[in-house]
Image (cartoon, rainbow over all chains, first blue to last red; front, top):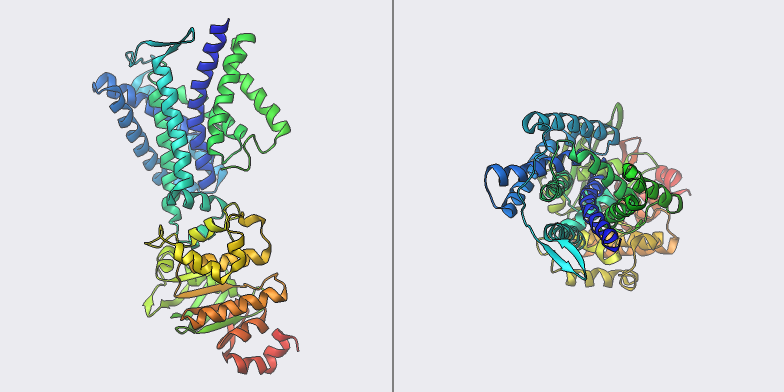
Length: 286
Length: 234
């Protein structure tokens, strides 16, 4: 039983950091462009398939393939931003329509190209680490650590660099930021692209753990939005914790409660939190 | 320094600025006075490129800037201290001031300038680690001006700096404005508080429903019948 609970905790934490990395994109995009980008799920899917393609078909080593996948996703994000999202700035409804439309188009395209047959990467990093009698798969641990590093790195960049300062200033007062000389259009594009790149990274890492289907991102993005709301929109570190809390709730919840409803547990938890803390767990922080 | 040449501005179909021409010379304080909704803020927003004119031209030190984006105008030394302060409420005083120097090439070495504005506004020095949102209106106004100064402006544009402040603070801000001008800065000061603005300025323009209806020497305007009746209340 101990192994089972520990396993579910670990699984929940790993899935949680994946929720967290998408949630970070959701939070950043919302803070800077005023739209909720549900299409981040398909960018995650794109990153996952790109990683699969670069390792399985192109034969690149997995770490290089991940970098290429992130690059491809960022490029796709840039195209999407310049062609579509640019016209939806600060317009929640239009942004929603565009992102939902993008999900339909990109998922159908992926289905056409990759078919519905699940794709699997060859074992990237086999082996386990024994730790106090518990078994930790090396790959899961690596994914977990990489995602943690990226989220904390983003936080450090936002608080310590001029770009981060400009972004945070813009989120507080767009016009004042412009009066300080912040190039606001460029900042918005940068944030949209960075968020898609984060989703691409999440997808590329996901590909090393689970099999791929064209619809893999849709559930993730819903969870990511949940995690972002749970944390309180705008909180960087909060999106990580929001994701992990959600992942762990689902993981541990499904030991004791029917597995079929696992997606509900996080949601119930979210509602419970929002009843007592309407602004989210980490409201008022960055 | 800055010059408006027959500038027209529309908000949708509303003609809010009508052939506005004005100029501010180097080291000169010029006041723009007028009632609420006369078009003062629109004039200043147009100066900074936050609002595009429908006709006319804007020049900064002789260069046409009508089509330049805001960033480029700021880079050329034109800085606006906006109406209602618009400080970054979640930033500390120090962080706000740093944002003021965002465009500077030497933005990682601004300590000397920080010390200079702290000397100008000692109250900000005391509160440098405090969040701007938790300060009083007067302190926020000082911060907004200090933040503008961090951009090393050659021409500082102030939108209603006296709004909502106690008379003693209004006087303090007026003194600061005069002091900046003696250091060579050009200042365009939009004010509803005509007494304060005319007290600072060498020249003034009176804006009414988007038109410049009076202009001239500030001392003469101060004693003119219309200005006394409509704007000074005596």
